[in-house]
Length: 219
Image (cartoon, rainbow, N blue to C red; front, side, top):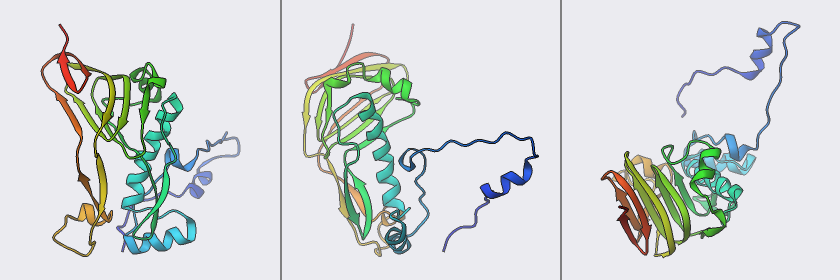
């Protein structure tokens, strides 16, 4: 049912310490540090009923978006960070804005803070999808839909936009027993239906500003 994996139990660690060892620990909220993806849909439903955590494909993806929403909220951006708990094939997931922040955009919270110099000027609705990759600064943005901005190496992009509004992306439930559908979707229980969105991919070296629906190179 589950793949064999090498593990080291934390209970074994004290056996390696002598009497003078100084041992401490750090406790973090679950959402900030742990979200396993290890159960199939049936097992995840049972696990969720017992513990509240399904630890499956859909919960892992939902938790990835949630931690990014939490980070943005911490900066002062207007966004519903907790989202709404909805069931996917009987498995509870925290649904909200789908926020994807690539390591090339911000690898640490300190770096993320520099990417949003005016957080109060940024607003993201719960139906939104935001994908940011590369050297991007978000100066102003009101998002109610889907926005993808990719800045290739050697480019710098400033988002100084008013309201970006479109039908966005949403999850569409699928038949998980349909073997014609890729397994990476069947383990989640849905596919991503990209109804509409604003997409920018900047490849030519230089500095650009996205405003009024256009990406213009700065002289």
